[in-house]
Length: 239
Image 1 (cartoon, rainbow, N blue to C red):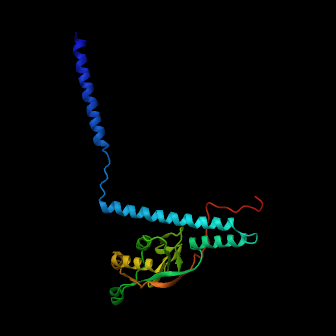
Image 2: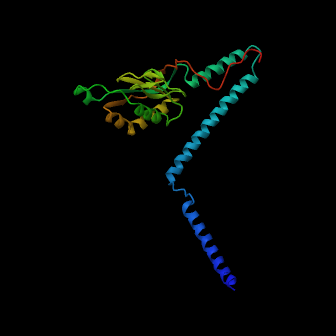
Image 3: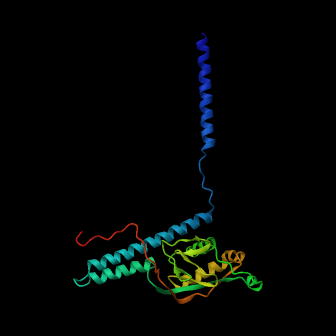
């Protein structure tokens, strides 16, 4: 008799426990909602379209290279190969280029000069922030104090000195040269830098960032240090 009375009670407790467990799991792991507004979504869509355009451009370039190899004469493989290697070197930043762009000047602030304060070195964090702002516009080539920025470039502090590619950046003033694909891109980049807060960040460090007018031609030197390749190795002839 007692067993019959306990059975409904146990079933009720089981149901209550199951419901409490489900509620706890719902509170602990709520469904993620997309809280982005319309402009955030439009911004992401714009970035995706830009990536899509870059991929299409890369595919077109590769198809053009393939077509050259397929249509080459017997005496042209070496020439086409040299052209391909030269293009890859230029894309990697290993060669000097001349393109539209602009020049930035980093100097000590007027107050620091008037008060006779020591000219401060630029900090790695500030330099990285500037490079990131520049790289918001794709296709830019950058030279900082005659040091070319490439994929393997490291901007860091070594023994209290800001370095680029392990080479010390001189005490201001020094120049930063930016190469762009077109003059229109140079104008867009200049407008963006002028409207951003990057100049204020420099001023807080007793430095000034002067943004030059976009030019039709600026010259950037190539990366002149040894380039370490982690993934490719040269094979002996005949392999």
